Length: 281
Image (cartoon, rainbow, N blue to C red; front, side, top):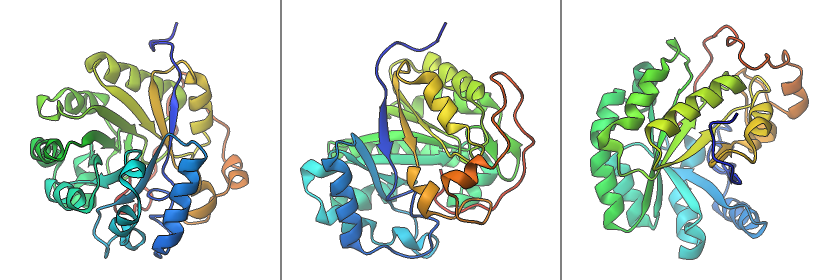
């Protein structure tokens, strides 16, 4: 029997953030705005439209605040922006952002490589990020990158994920995003961790952010949809627009040339270190 409450799930499109961040070039602001408005008009419930990451490290995100400025307050109510520090929250709020995805890596090695601080440093700074969000009447969610594997240290202890999710300093976050940054988690593993996070923080909405590296996002999605009381943030655009972590353009046929998914409950495939992009979830 499922651990989840039977309700419909929902999707969040991350084309404009995760789908573009590895492309190396800046898509013109007007094109990003057109994509955002097209997706919203099609009825996509929520979008990630950009990031406050340093432009020199993640050039495709350099015009994120220009995109924010071009959208209406009503449109921005359905749009999230990636942040990693209270200062970034403040800058984004000044530009008009009201939905903040505060991201940190469960793995210290990845968090240091990504934003130059330990996971504890990021957790310690979160109350200030929450305060700044509340000042502008916004919403903030906690995104836990490398919830399953780290490109530097390998498999991540689930207890680290649960400890951060249950830390009282994160209580102001309405949602928790469990991110499979490398796309190596198998369906039963995702199910078990999300069930544990939900059990430890039942008052919050749970989101799963997946990468289809091993062709496991689809079986994971279908296993829990629509039973899971959660949202899915899957970078569909990465399939067709962004270089994969294997150093080539990833398309659905290329993905399916990988080994088939392991049966539910089987151990994860051997971990391998891959190239990492800044701002990665």
